[in-house]
Image (cartoon, rainbow, N blue to C red; front, side, top):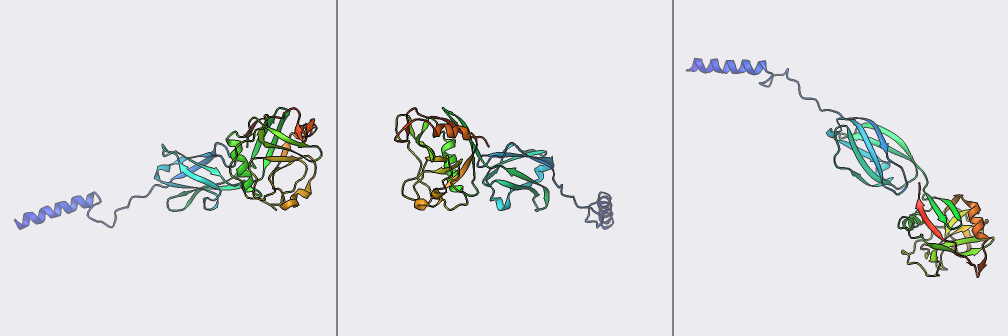
Length: 277
């Protein structure tokens, strides 16, 4: 019986050796598959709006990390869409900064698989009125609170059918607070006054109207029809947050309408305000 047992052990050992078993030093461990990334494509890059980033490559199901900006500080609410495959994954977030934004894709061990720089332009708002259209460009880098406040009103279609209710030739045109019947619109909470911020009340710039209280601006804005640099400091200052980049002739036409106590005789209606960039 002892001879037979030894024979059986010998046969098993031979079989294990033949198939790489038995803990042989010649066995080769399995190699982890490393993902590769060939491209990252955004569907659009618009400040404070959700952007979808499509990542394409191979073996993406082995795990990747998608990073936008330094420490995710330049794009909020980063999420991965369900249904990703080995060749494509989709991530989304809302850019919180303008200018150059770095995009990096990493493997699970932190090695860089792909990197690219993208440009987020300054936000623009198309303001259509009963007297013509104008395009406003906003500066969230110098007036982040004010720009965010204004965009909140734009996104909710708040300004639709409100009017430019105050027109002072050689000074400003002001709107965003009343309808043509003279009824005041219900606004969001007032915001902090952002002055000084490096922007001045020059011709064509857009700024927030307020009461004598410094932190009282809500929805009303004005457009300077001339250089009004005194407004940068008068009474604590008035916060500029953008400028008219197209449509100054419309601003001048509104400034020239007939008024009664600065109220236009014929309403100048804002028909829509839409973020286009």
